[in-house]
Image (cartoon, rainbow, N blue to C red; front, side, top):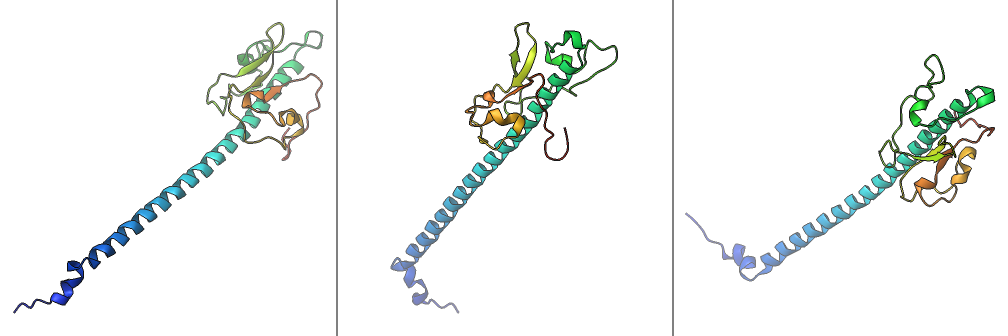
Length: 178
């Protein structure tokens, strides 16, 4: 036999049950909003970490170009020292009878992702240095190595110029690599 207990349905009849469901809905909205804020913060932290990594790669790649330009210049005959006029000359020195490489490849700019670099050229078109073409503001503003000390306080990545100066003292970075 079926029995009907009115006391079981009274909260729904007078509206108390509906209000309780509303609190669950508000709690769910607060939970979703909190998760959204946490995901946004995680995205910001990830973006900053990504940018710092690209900056470190730019410092490494720029130094590779600086060293290659330096080696190209130093391996010139002493009476006619000259610089490369194209980055491709750093891949295979056309002046040498054998294969002489100063770079393994034309490295892309880590900031822009392009193989296009800003070139610091001399009066005869010789390449003295390279720099990024990015106009973004760097995160790193100080605490550079001695060879990159002129990067202190620069406002854009394009201001970080990796240039060879004849006779400059080369300091080995930490870790022993020169």
